[in-house]
Image (cartoon, rainbow, N blue to C red; front, top):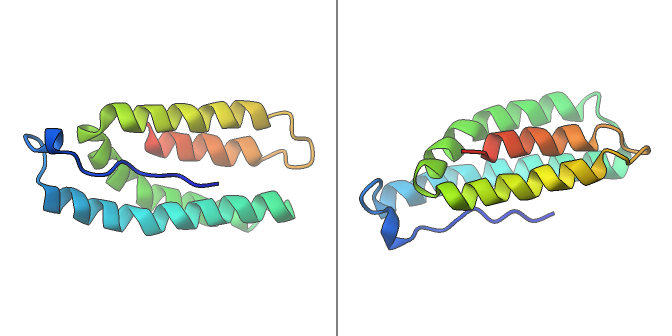
Amino acid sequence: MEIKLPKYRSEFEPRITEQAYSDLLQQAIPLMERAIQLYETYCKTGKDDILYPVFGEVVSRLRPKLRTLAYVAWSDMHNLAGRLSAAAEMSVFDIDRPHKATFLYDLAGAVEP
């Protein structure tokens, strides 16, 4: 899975400077990549007893950064959250990986503005 966070656009200028946005984005990207890595590991292994608590910790550190990004890129982040929620809805029927939807819903919740 690949998730692209929105890049800075000039229309964001009244709310945040390009440097501040870039700094937040640079902090959020590694956390997002780690969350995706943990989710994909769960999808491969089905072991959530260790992965999910670590995933939750990563998402809790990611959430404040994404909330600030969402303040200026609201529609982009809302659309991303919608795509993650839709993927979660589709995965609820995955009987081999029953917690797949939980991972996706948690990530969508962190992204939602």
